[in-house]
Length: 180
View (tube, rainbow, N blue to C red):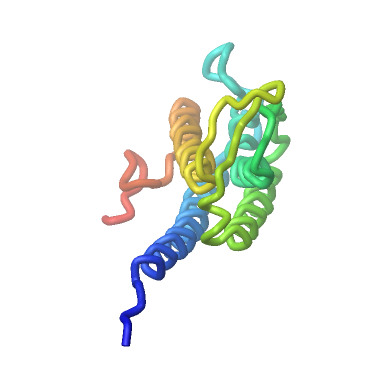
């Protein structure tokens, strides 16, 4: 009797586990993003901290739409550099509604890609010439997650500058302590 090779099964289980972890992170982080978007002062959506900065409403919609946009970007295995519009939210509810649609779309795509899809090589091109290549799962980690965290950090600064209480995202803020 020969023993089965468990290396392949272990590797598949690890990738499968990675998919489940990404889905869990997507939903947990969406809730943190939602709490920030709920604090948007609707009378200040056109406000910018600097002339070269996005407006509060542009930043809010950008953050809310990133999971959807990145999932759409990652769907084909070869994609041209996209033009990313920076439209401005007209209301807090518009940003929250986009976040809900965005997270649902991204979760659906992650669930569909599963193990094999996350390992597939994704290529970004400009004029048909490759700019970068990486496994789809690495693209999602870099852009769907880390990119959101970067912009969410910007949003907390915008809110602070507008004297809006900042909710906790990764621990206490000067306004709220989830542990206290």
